[in-house]
Length: 122
Image (cartoon, rainbow, N blue to C red; front, side, top):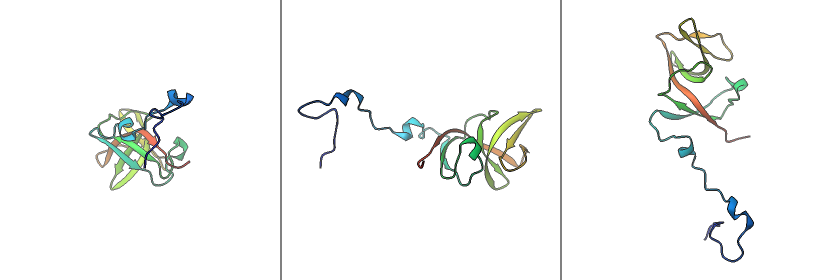
């Protein structure tokens, strides 16, 4: 079986030939092979108002520095949460959607900063 290759046909060349795009490699585009970069699947609707929905895949960078306004993946006790980061009065704060802000302390870890979102369903 032969697959179609728009740039290698015989006979009349398609006028659309100039618009043939290469296959998109998501691992390359999202830099998933770099150390410290992890895909994380979202469970729940915790940050729906930020456009993050159940089933989305987030690209999390564990080597990134915390930045106010960014979404992060954090550990509180043994729970994994998504929250928006803020910095106030020399303290980092996690701002989950459905609960009160939490000051980052010794028992809380900001594990990674979300750098991209991939959605497979519309």
